[in-house]
Amino acid sequence: MTEEMKRVEIGFGGGQVMSSRLEARYLEALREALVSTDKLASEAASWYELESEDGVISLDLRQVVFVRVAAAPHTIGFSGT
Image (tube, rainbow, N blue to C red; front, top):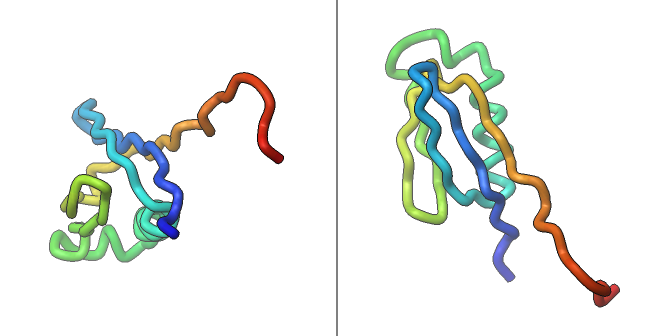
């Protein structure tokens, strides 16, 4: 069974925003990398390879200013549980 994909928007210092769908484990790894003080240590350490539904995305972590995760989709009607 595949892991649930989450819609994520990543915002950059220049105002650009990119959207992608990520598995929860990759989203958590990105968050951990962003809070790490190692991202400021050197230019080489700031690049991060992110696995997404569309392929590998290379991010400069020093430029990331926000990560937004879309809310769970709304459903209408009765649930099966």
